Amino acid sequence: MDKTTLTASDLWSAVSTEIRSVLNEQTYATWFEPISAVGLDAKSITLEVPSKFYYEWIDRHYRKMLLSKIKAISGKKLIVRYSVVLGEPQKKETNGDNAIEKSIDPNERFYDSGSRLNKRYTFTSFVEGSNNQLAKAASVSVADSPGQTSFNPLVIYGGVGLGKTHLLQAIGNKVLIRKPAPKVHYTTSEKFTLDFISAIQNNNSSNFSTRYRNVDVLLVDDIQFLQKKEQTQEQFFHTFNDLYQRGKQVILTMDRHPSELYGLKDRLLSRFQSGLIVDVQAPNLETRIAILQKKAADDSLEIPFEITELIATNVRGNIREMEGALIKLLAYSSLSHTDITMSLAKRALRETLGRSGAKSVSIDDVIQSVSESLDVPENKLIGRGRKMEVANARQVAMYLSREVVGASLENIGLHFGGRDHTTVIHACRSVKGKMNNKSDFQRQVDGIRSQLEF
Ligand code: ADP
Ligand code: MG
Image (cartoon, rainbow, N blue to C red; front, side, top):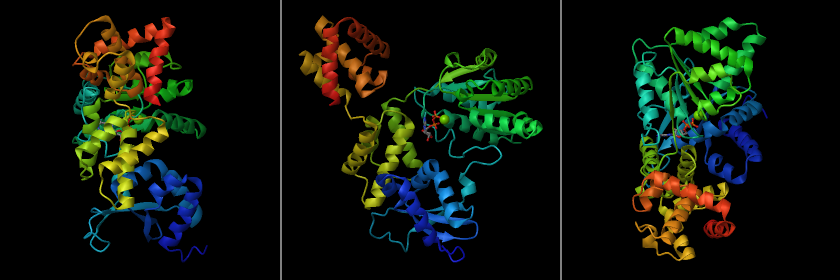
């Protein structure tokens, strides 16, 4: 290809053909087909995307690939700029002529190069729920008085996609508002490791020390990846001590409680436990709905309540997956130029759920199946009666609501006559215990389960 006369659309057509060859058809159709290239200069290519969600999605999932294909084809390392056509495509009067274009300066939204913080992750955009209340409160207080509280280090732990990185970065962003702005550095334990290795290789440890020790607030994400890397752990230990002794704030995230992190040196673990350890858990239904609504509102999208509810009820894994489902729906809507309706939402969701192998079973479905199979009326299942068969059937229904629906303890409690979450925990334990000991009971429960999952 003649590189001197390459136009934006030539370049994009070549790049997208390449991309098409490595992605599956559906993914390509969803994310890349709607893109057109609208500008090309010596330094950058501008891609027009249907919504802000698009570029965030593309940026998060395909950035590397996109940049490398562009480089391979254009022979240059170009910056990708995104331009979003604002306005609803489904409205007739909004055609190409009067659509407002908004050019997004990549520097404005990409990680700030000094602190490596993403401005999107703030406390304002973080929805508080019973699952993350303590973690949020502790984070806010550390952000308000870095190094001044006994929460040093502050350790936030919990499963994937539950908001740890968001909180960590929110602390950083809030600290930076202070005047004069303290020095904040965000890193992941993997990046820390790489920096350390390259410092050794280049015999340049002073650079490394400056970067990590010359800060007021050090944020290190995903500490679990330091497992088994003894030398890096050693280095981290010294960095930590140095900061700690000088009253600097350290905040760490990890995927489990420090006492369950294997392959980490004891003295490091005991350091982690010397401050405050808080967890983030999976959000309950109400919080999931609130999060979706917030995401939509932050992007000035109007999504009917029933639809956020549908997504929140069906996508129960983690928040990232739930956002993925919302983005998918938006993509569907822009691609087909239709409003976001319930039937569109169901279609988009069916695909998302189909792929992850999940099926939308609700607690009500469980109650109905258990009622039929064990011959206990539904109203008794959710009632207060303590008769043995009823109580047993109720425990089975609670257990299946947890296992098959993946509902939160609180939510299950609510469905079964407003019971406490400890009752649900007890029910699940008791059913598991009985399943281990009695094979006919196990068969019975498995039978109901397979009916539900079929
Ligand atoms: P983790 O680091 O725990 O794997 P992230 O912090 O990356 O999870 O969160 C995944 C996604 O979910 C992010 O886009 C984040 O903004 C969003 N998210 C998680 N918790 C919340 C919350 N409470 N309110 C709003 N968004 C959230
Ligand atoms: Mg994270």
